[in-house]
Length: 190
Image (tube, rainbow, N blue to C red; front, side, top):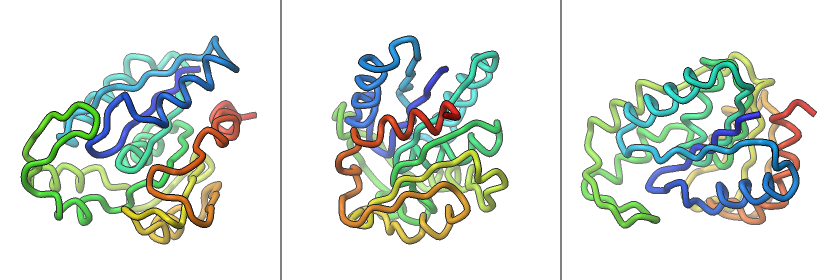
């Protein structure tokens, strides 16, 4: 199986959760493959990277893991391509939340600076998934202590999916490593 980890806003392939899942696969399921593409800050380019990857690898079993903004992207991809996905503290309406980030931003991992503009907001709006048509494809992990996103918005939007809500925690999803086997089993259909 090919796992695609989709990192969040101002993150990168160096994301802790991506590295944690990579280590989990290495230790427990070394025949599986994980790809963590570096995504553009422009949503249209990020989605082009992801859709190109999926289209190039369609002959393989593909599963998605998305965190925060990556969860927003993974939702759209899951529903469009009928792929299983696990969403970790997913952004529900990032085009509304990220208005506060208009202007210069810096990637947490690379230090690269870029301008976040209204065009970014328009591009996010273009890939919003209003209705979850195939909830059985999604597992959603939420922590109520998320200081960035209101977990209740995701809890409501994804209520028909396999939903796990933990009390406390934070946006990074504390103790993520404890869920790697659960994620793996869900995505592989076991």
